[in-house]
Image 1 (cartoon, rainbow, N blue to C red):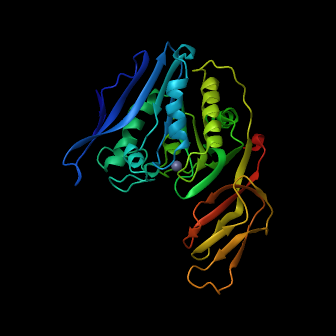
Image 2 (image 1 turned 180 degrees about the vertical axis):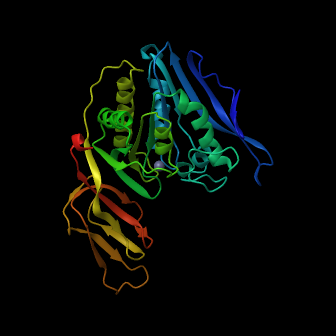
Image 3 (image 1 turned 45 degrees about the horizontal axis):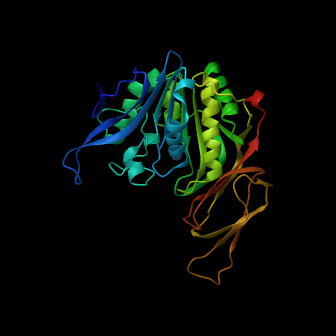
Amino acid sequence: MISFGPVHTTLDFSAAGINAGNLYLDHSDDRHAASLIPVPVIVLRRGEGPTVLLTAGIHGDEYEGQIALRRLVHDLPLAELTGRIILLPAFNAPAVRAARRVSPLDGVNLNRAFPGAPDRGPTAAIAGFVMEHLVPMADFVLDLHSGGTTGLYADQAFLSLPAEPRLRAKGIEAAAWLGAPLTVTIPLEPDFGDFDGAVLAHGVPFLSSEFGGGALVSPGSLARAVAGVRRVLHWTGVWRGDCAAPGTRYVVPAPGGRLLAPRAGLFEPAFDVGQEVAADQIAGRLHDVDEPLRPPLDLRFGAAGVVVNRYRAALVPAGAILATVAGTVAPETL
Ligand SMILES: [Zn+2]
């Protein structure tokens, strides 16, 4: 048995074949005086080779990745593996079961709880278990996200660029093999509490991604996620499938590229994710909910580029990020 604070598992991560079990979170609250909340984990192992950790469901209402990893368990022939794949398809399992972004147990966003702690609540304990026991086993970590209930994304890799050259180069290369149409790159933010920063600080190369969103399952985004994960597995050497790197378009968020709702209202967009837009182009109109005679407010893009994400719902609060525009950058300049 291995444990970290209130989380433990008896799963043997070194056993050959396909083995499934749970991380168990020992938790006591109003609903259950005492319970062991399961977080499913699957290990595929054949022979000696690299270990890849695949994760989805850090945010419980993001589904393409959760389904892509579940499909992989059934579709990837064990005979084609050399090494080990560890899958956490519902990383924040309490949030997954509640169809929520954050944990219903403590209201914490798992992607701000890293590197975790044994004594700061259930979400930090799950983060800490994975950092303490699973990340050290891994040669590469791929984390799958989607837009969730309030967002829609153009299918993309999301690459936090560390200063360390090897980790930086590995991330850029992994994005080319994931092969999403876009790769959004940002400088790594230290002490942000996200999985990206914690894994990279541990010296393990890492790539995140965003496929689809809206708490839906887009067949196109799911297909791109499934194919992309397989290509990354091939690149790491753990799966010998026949594929090539399709490449990707690297972009950076443009200065002034965040379109904010200046007030609450009903947003009528004039664009979709993945669309090329010009600076000062009309992005849409914001209608007043309570005063139909009040003229709608024209909103314009503040930068040129490609729309990488958008707010999903029509009813938007003041300050909502309605869209993010990013500009192309040459990979050799990253
Ligand atoms: Zn997410």
